[in-house]
Image 1 (tube, helix red, strand yellow):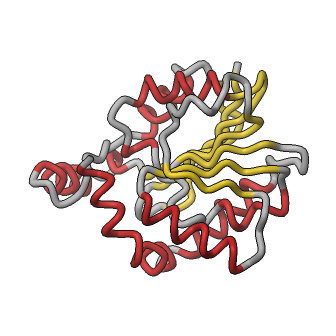
Image 2 (image 1 turned 180 degrees about the horizontal axis):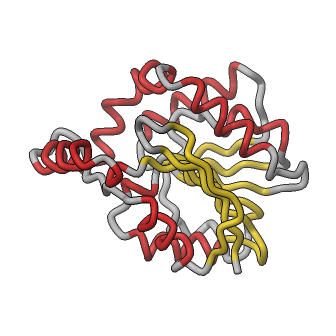
Length: 205
């Protein structure tokens, strides 16, 4: 897979790149924690190097953290081991892994992943299926469609294969994507005006 190779290459430098926006990550972690319970079973979909999972592990019962990049998973595991975190299961896998059963999760995290999906409606349907009744999806997504120049630039770069395909959401399209997946949005906030990143929490209907 083209995108898997891209993220494998990115893995070693991923934390340094993301640390440039450390304040936004801190905000995401703080806001996410407010919606968690110590009895929760979490799925971190597109967990990367564990930047979120490792920080919320103390607030929940168990985290199943998945990513299509085996290199990202390796780094996430090393970081968790270094901090003696024992309630995260890092797995190189996809959300369609049959090990994950219907109604298994209290919360599914989709941090910086919705704009990278090839088939968003199919994934949203799967997320809904995996959540318990009333379960939450917690997302952070850049809405590049709000910035005309950025959306054109990203589209060109992805077309020539430098980066994987990126969807330039407008915020209204992102909201529709979530509500059309049979969710009710219960919280929404713009995390970063410059890059139009939105934090959204939605409840399974």
